[in-house]
Image (cartoon, rainbow, N blue to C red; front, side, top):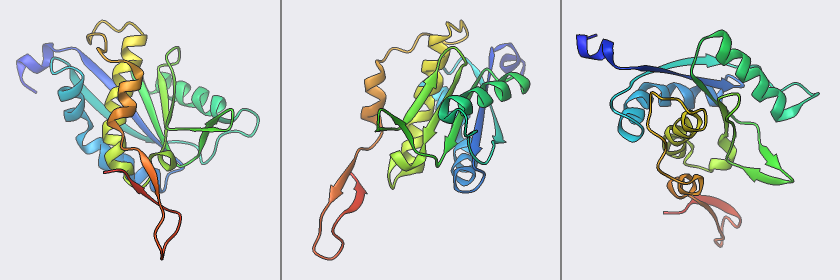
Amino acid sequence: MTHSEQHRPEVVVGLVATPPDHPARVAARLSAELAGRLSERVDAGVRWTVREGWGEVAPRRDGGVEALLDDLARRRTDDRWDVAICLTDLPLHTERVPLVAQTSARRRVAMVSLPALGLGQLRAARAAVPDLVSRLLTDASDQRVPPAGWAPAEMASRVAAVRRVVGEADAGELSPRG
């Protein structure tokens, strides 16, 4: 590490996969490039450190997603991460509407539902995770990064939408909108 890198503020991002199978493969590929993406999209003046971890196999039955967010927040605190993002293959819903991501500014954590991203999960996660990190740090009034200069709806425009493609042979197949 150079002398100038030592004087830049450090932000530690925990990237957790739960359960540790397909989400872990996506997290491993994303974590290799996430620091660079955060530098490009959020703030080049910050030294971004990405730590990988594995989560519980499933959320506790007594609390669903909120319990998983609580578990993630405990992990964030125990491991001394500034923010934590969980990639999961569990479906996220609110009032029966599927969600791509759920955040908790108070806990400084977010979850991304890989199934909601459709077929281009890695590409969509590359787009969504830097925005989620930026939003969590902004909402927490973290002075190490400038406030996010975008509305939450802008993140949705960066994640490829999924549309229904009905063909003669494979009716009902889903594909990313190009």
